[in-house]
Length: 206
Image (cartoon, rainbow, N blue to C red; front, side, top):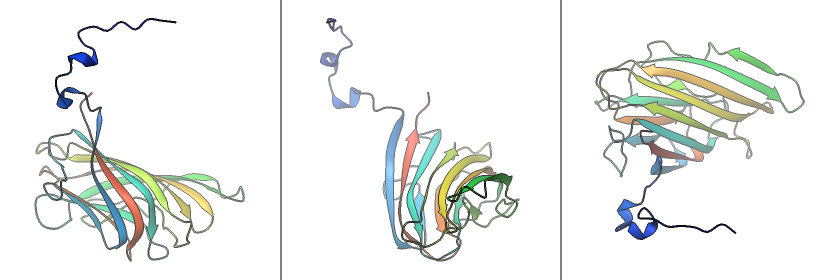
């Protein structure tokens, strides 16, 4: 049996809880939908941080359920004003496979990309409203407080498509503004977000 040798860097040297490293990823805020028209994360409100505290922000989507059949899950950004209308350009591709083993495909999705659009940008294919149908995924936003560069983002989502398929959608793009992004809003293409959870994390420098 190996012996454990303690030194001056052991836990006995910790003088306060604040001295204990908290890890590279810090939970900031959780929002839970209940027939919600939007889920919005706004810097400085309700304990939300979207500033230079972290260089990377991560949103996790957990069992997002649509209130209206055949609606895409979408995102938009606020860049200092009161509206979510930052100019955006994205690229979108997907991989899909059916429960019956058919409809396997990987393709670019011209129906979901946006070019210099101020409207909501799709992050998924259309969701159904079946009790067991939902969306899960992640969304990374880089340096939203920068006033020099555009604001890059990368999203990956998977849905149980209403035609009994798994569809994974890959979206990448940028908000083509040099103003700081101080709000991120998630919404369905039509109708409400019936239920589901979105968690926001900040990721520290490595």
